[in-house]
Amino acid sequence: MKILRGISAVGVLAFLAAAPPAHGLAQKLSFEQVVQRGSTILVGTVVSSSTRWGEGHKMIWTDYEVSVEEVWKGDPRQSVTLSFAGGTVDGKSVLVSHVPRLEIGGTYVLSLNDLRRLFTSPVVGAEQGLFREVTDKATGDRILLNAEEWAVGLGNDGDLRSLAPAEVSGAPDVVTLRRDAPPLAQSASERSSTREIQAVYSDGAGNPLPAPASGPPLATVASRGAATGGKPLTRATLRTAVRQVLDSPERPAR
Image 1 (cartoon, rainbow, N blue to C red):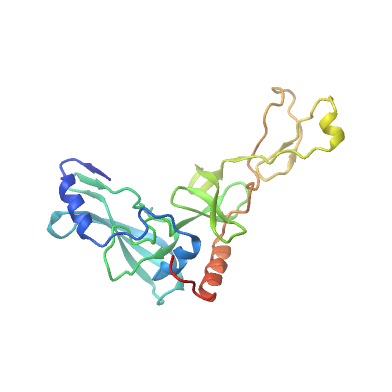
Image 2 (tube, rainbow, N blue to C red):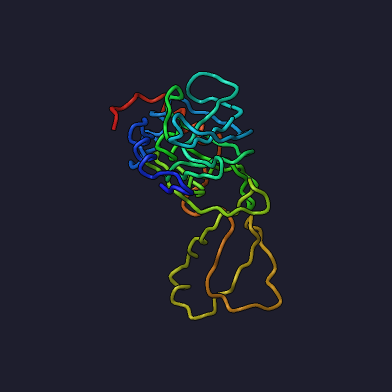
């Protein structure tokens, strides 16, 4: 946690020790736990934000007004105000590690703690229950990024895994995924052959392109096509995965 410009670290730490802790702040949660521990799971777009001092001027809070599009778990609602520890008021700032910042205009899938209580982060697992919806520039698909801005997928074990880091590309909600190309398959005869390997060129969506008039010798291959190791989650695929967890017999808490 970083404290900036005149706010007492001791006072803030004491406040956080007394406040209800964000679940999972130091604990890695499985996807199943993220779903089961959420009191509310919703999809919403941030329409505004404001900052304020908390009671006794011990903590700065950032409040986000979220317009709700879908509710996957919990009571239906049209909007919700989410309070996160940290922010800037009167030239003084507080930054709390593992407490996410939301962007106005951003659309998120959020698994939330009990909204009747105040947490340093209302998101389950501090930031693990947050996914931002963006557009993959290469494919045009709307995909989900985790709080670390990585595209994520579901492994065969049903748990989340990071696929590729995302870079802002042109517009705030359009990203380019930075991926390595899959290895080229070779037959036994090709592996033993000494003939020169020919480069194959394609655009970001994997469509073939003619070779340039001249260029450097082929050394490594990079791809902006489909992510290796799995397909990025979309809102629809995450909704299905959440429903499968909710509909399955609940296992003992882990």
